[in-house]
Length: 301
View (cartoon, rainbow, N blue to C red):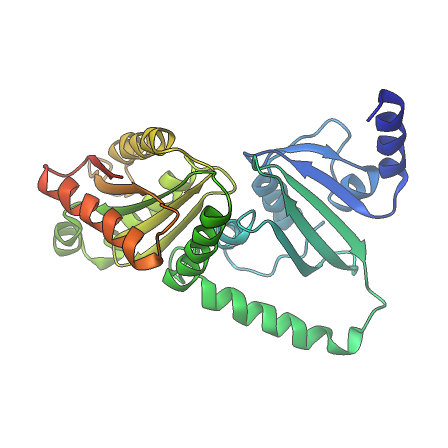
């Protein structure tokens, strides 16, 4: 495309009534047309992350209509679905009363094109039914305590990545993470404190991840991490950052001296893998990490 065509395209996008925005692989806003900036109350210079934008909208009661008593839990739940599929479409409300049809298109390197069109006048009679369906679907995919993906959603994402791995050559890695000696925390500090440690760990891990990475709770103190377009070496580096961040975390305000560690089992998906085979390799690697003294990473090819 010539420079002249690029300039023309950007000018037409900026004049469009449709909302258009481009987010990079870290979910930072890199471009937004005038309609998007006006709808979400962004100045021409602002380039926030999507999470920062939604948090500000919620606190100022403008932009996206977000119905929740806990914005951080809502954000964790939304991020567990955002950017995990090549294409996603859904309905969304704005605080000004508009009803939008939103689409998210992912590039191979993790950038996201967001587009939205006003469909307020279309089929309003069935709107509440569709909204109730969407709420039920989100609940079925979300761990209620942490707001991240639950086992069901993780397995759906893993199945999709296995299919993509068979069709394309891009590497994908799977890790299982487990908090070390977690029963001891529950026994000594109580289950509410244990819940705080789990939620603190979730925030610690998410801070190390990209938008396209999948992360969820398998159950108890065990979690799964899905790293698309990631080599084993890159995944090992990511896991080492998670281990280091977990060592630094102090999730209990009443006991700032209390820390924790985790162990990680990692594997790279193979073209002939199914869910059972790749999960078994990661689980075996986790068992090896636990047997090697915990607070470490073990990889299995």
